[in-house]
Image (cartoon, rainbow, N blue to C red; front, top):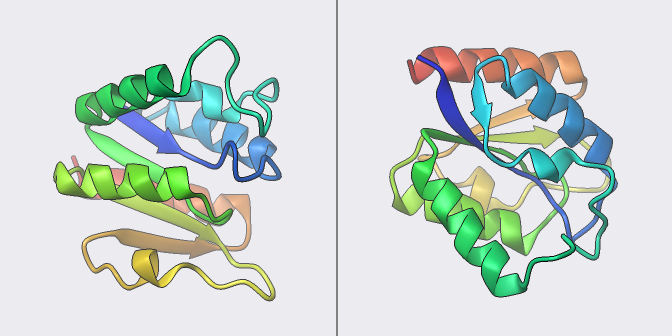
Length: 141
């Protein structure tokens, strides 16, 4: 059965990984419906989405998290919003995969890395991230 997938990635905390998010979202769509495709959209800047108030974004995203069967978060760029989304999904008992791209001079947040209820997957190359995604989806079938 195809899953509803909530993909979380940094928007206002930095868009350096936007192209990566786009590739991950494209790959995730093989496993189901990605509710948050806009996270990978190059037109979405660090200023956020146009045409929606912060309250509208908050309500929409909470609704999507509730609807989602799983959450996949790319947590390499520290983001308060992504952390909030992960914590909300955890409170709702959603299966969560946190992808972390290893980087020099940066460590993953202890609040993510130290949480045994999250599946944290480290990678250096996109192909490794894809392997982690496939393993995650096999585990939640």
